[in-house]
Image (cartoon, rainbow, N blue to C red; front, side, top):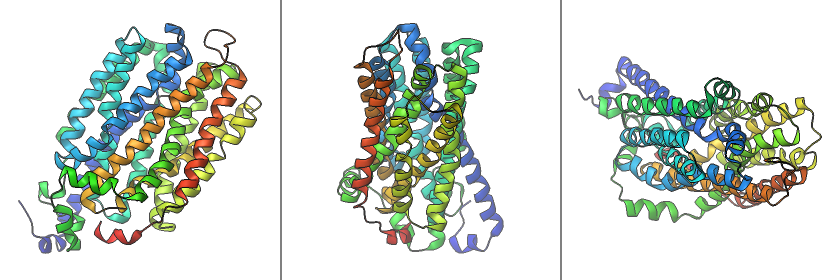
Length: 440
C-alpha cells in the first residue's frame, strides 16, 4: 500500500516502521561489509603462511595481495552505475555471491596465479558493497546522518578486520588456512542470499516515504533518471573530485599496504614475535578504526560540520604514525607497538568522511557513481602500495627464507609516508561547498 507524503508525515507509527526496517537493512549490509573487510585484511596474517608454503618472494605476495585491490578498483565505477540504475539490492547479492566463489578458488589454489585469481574474484565481488551501501544510505537517511552512519558501517567492517587477526590465527591453527578460507567462502555466499531477501533499494518500494520526499522540492532531483554518459561526464568533470581522489589514493592506500599486508611480516621479521603476538598487535589497527570511523563521522556531521577539516587533519595525524615506523623501526617496545597500531587505526578512521564529501560535490542522483568513482582512487592506492612496498623489500638480500633485514622495512615505510605528504598538499587546495546539503 502506498501512502501520500502528507498522510505519512502525520503517521508517526508508519515512520517508526520505516526506521525499524531501515535498521534491518543496515544490519544486513553491515554483516556483508564485515565479511568484505575480513577478506581485505586477512593477508596480513595468512601472508607469512603462504610465503612459507610456496617459498614466495615478497614481490609475489605483494602481487597476490594487490589483485584484490585492482579488482576492487575495477568494479568501483561500474558498481556506482549499477547501484544507481540496477539497484543496490541486486548488485550486492550477485557480486557478493561471486566473491564467495573467489574465496573457494583462493582456498584451493596450488600456485601463485590461482591465488591471485581467487583474490581478484573476491575483490571484484565485494567491491560493490560499500558503494551500493552508500546509495542505500542516501535514500534511507537524512543528509546530516550520512557521515555518522557511514562511519558506523566502516566500524562494523573493521570488526571483520579484527576477526582476520587473532581469531583467524586461532582458526588457522585449528583447521588450517585453506579450510579457514573455505569456511569464510561459504559464509560469504550465505550473506549474499540474505542480502537479496532483506534489502530494498528505496523506502517507497515498501510504501514508505523517503526523507527527501518529506522535505518536498528535492524529490524531483532525486528521482530524475540518470544516463551512464551523463553520470560519467558530471563526476569526472569536476576538478575538486581529483583533489579528493589524490588524498585518498595515499590515505586509504597506505594503511591497506601496511596494515593489511606488510605489518605482519614486519612484526615477525624485525621483532621476531610469534604469529599469535603479531596477530594481537595487528588487531589494534582495526580496533582503532572501530572507534575512529564513527567518531570522525560524528565530528564531521555534528561538531565541525566539515568534511575537509576532518579529512585533512585526520590525514596529518595519521602521517605522524610513520615517524616511529621509519626512524625507530626496530627499537619500539611491544607496548609501544600496540599503542602505535591503535593510533594508526584511530587516525586512519578519519578517512570515512571522504564518501559523503564526494556525494556533496554533486546532486543526489549521482551519489552511487561519485562514491564508486572515488573508490577507484582508494583501491588503486591499496594495490599500488602493497605491490610497490613488496618490490622495495624484495630489492634487499634476505637474511633467511622469507626474512628480510631492517633496512628493507625502513625503506618500504618511506614510500607511504611520502605519498601521504603529497596527498595532504594536494587536498589543501580543495574548497568545500556545503551548500549542496539542501538537495541531499
